[in-house]
Structure formats: C-alpha cells, structure tokens
Amino acid sequence: RRRDEEAWTDRFLECGARLRHRRAAYAARLTGALASGFRPGGESYEVLVPGRGGTEHDERAALAEEITTALPRERAAGRSLAGPHRDAVELRLDGRDAAEGASSGQARSLLLALALASLRVYREETGRAAVALLDDLDSELDVNPCKEKKLSNMRSVLKDEALTLTPIQAMTLETAILFLQDDEMVEVTPKSVRLRKAILSVQDRKCAKRDA
Image (cartoon, rainbow, N blue to C red; front, side, top):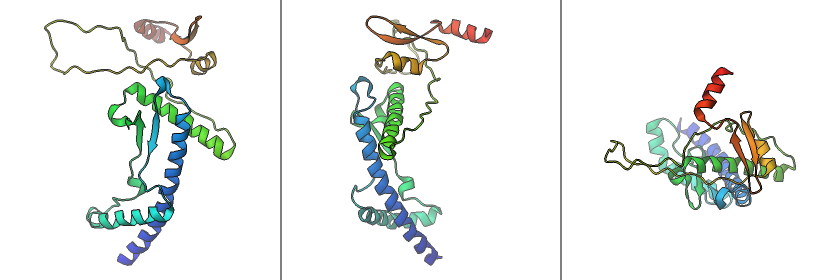
C-alpha cells in the first residue's frame, strides 16, 4: 500500500506543480487585464494565488515539502490535505482582501471585472471572442440611501451597522442599452445617461408584476 502511495504521490507532484505554475501565470495575465479594464470609481483589482512564481521544478519542490509535512495528518484523516486543490485564491481590492473589506456592491463589481478580464485574456490567447453569459443581472437590491437615522432614545438590541454603497458607474448609451431590462428605461439628460425603473415605487412594481 505504501508503494501505491508513493507512485500516486509522484504523479500528484508532477500534475500539481504544472497546475500551480500555469495557474500563477494565468492569474498574472488576469491581473494585467484588470488593471486596464472595468474599474468603477478607479478601484484596483488583483488576483493572487499560492506559489513560488518560478519554474515547474520550483513548484514541485515546494509541493513535495508541503505533502511531506502534511502526510501524517493525511493518513489520520484519510484524505488529501495539501496540494493545488486546497489552495485559496485571494481577490484583492485596493490592496486589501476583498473577502474582508468589500461591500456587496464592490464584490459584484469585482466579479464583473473578473468576467470581463477573463474574456479579454481568452481573446488575446486564442484570437477568438467568447460569448459572455452574465446571469446575475436580474438580481436587484431596493435601497434608500437618503433614509435618515432616527434620533431618539430608543435603541435596538442589534448593534448599528455601517453600510457602504458603491459609487454609481457612469454609463454610455451603448452600455445602458446592453444592461437594459424589460421593466427599465434609459434616461438621457444633457449631463448623464442612466438606467431607471419604468415604475419607480417598489410597491407599485410588485403590484404591477402580480397583475401582469
């Protein structure tokens, strides 16, 4: 059984080192595309993955050290605990971990920027354009940023929470038409182009949807 384990470990080192090396190179290309792509509010994005950033030989040596260290725990757990499949990909927003400090709006902007950057990298590598399926456009959040906080002596048992709103992204007419939904309108003024709901009231929209 130990002989089988050694054979599989050798194969795992070969494939894992190649995967880490190629993944690091792809993450670097993604970060380059993010730097000149969709960046609302001038935000900066990065994609960081574990790895030495050297050759496949360097990655193999580092992975072998990880596996040797984790081997006793792996045998006790009965599963693999080290390798590229266990690596965490870190997305950074303005130099900090997006998982810790990004608002929901910033997280969605980051995911959209990643999708557009991956399309750009694919086009540069293959010379062919890919079809982008943005399946999260229908998700909406009804908010009232002008709602004031009640200045009374009544307090909730819950603590106050700071809500960060992502700045509005300026749109061109072509971009607005691209994101336009059936219940929306493109509003064009001398100073701006923006999307708005055809029915502004949230309650009226629910009634109209129910009566449709």
